[in-house]
Length: 105
Image 1 (cartoon, rainbow, N blue to C red):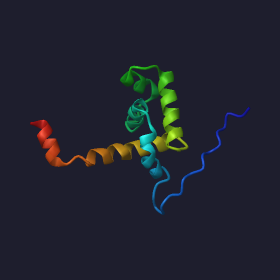
Image 2 (image 1 turned 180 degrees about the horizontal axis):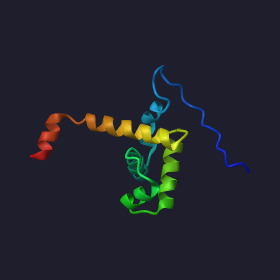
Image 3 (image 1 turned 180 degrees about the vertical axis):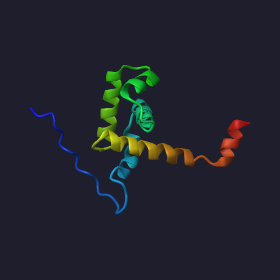
Image 4 (image 1 turned 135 degrees about the vertical axis):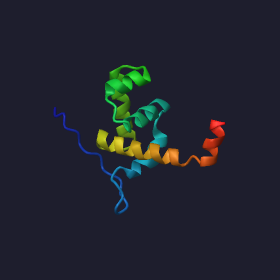
């Protein structure tokens, strides 16, 4: 049996939009733990480092990463990292400056 994965059919992209951009609309499919793993991907951490952050085994992290890639319909860890980085950046930019000032008081 071959270990080569068949690429997932990609969702149609808007012209000029990165191929992983449609995945941002599917983040709601992730469990809370998968979402934590997804956000750690943006930091470029290894599975071992993510396992230490999440207090789980490296094998569990591999399972979470695979689930993230599958549920977001991506075809690589790199695509998941890029989507995670943009997702995290956009989430932080949604916080209004007034809210930040209030939370620091």
